[in-house]
Image 1 (cartoon, one colour):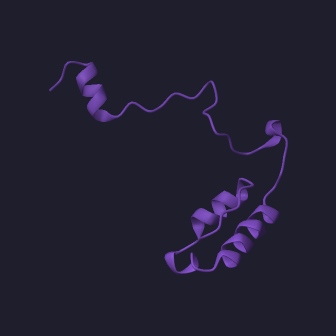
Image 2 (cartoon, one colour):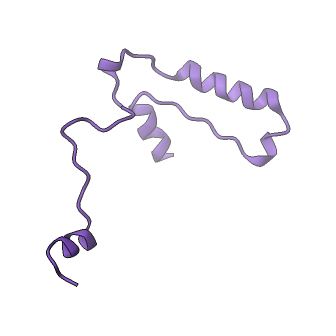
Image 3 (spheres, helix red, strand yellow):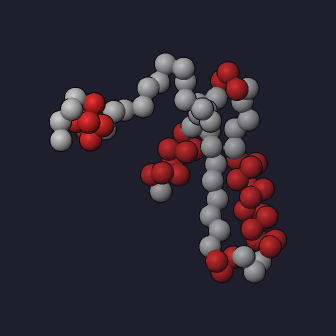
Length: 73
């Protein structure tokens, strides 16, 4: 539930489909449409999420990489 709440806070909606649902195409399509209806549609400049990292973001350097960069074994 917490993950879904975080998505919703960011303006994203999700839906779940399990193997047993696949036999009922109408059920799956309705879930997809319902999630789409709930989703916020904001201009890109106002979205609280993005597909690519912002220009200022740098990935963290993990401990093994730090060791190898410093010549440690």
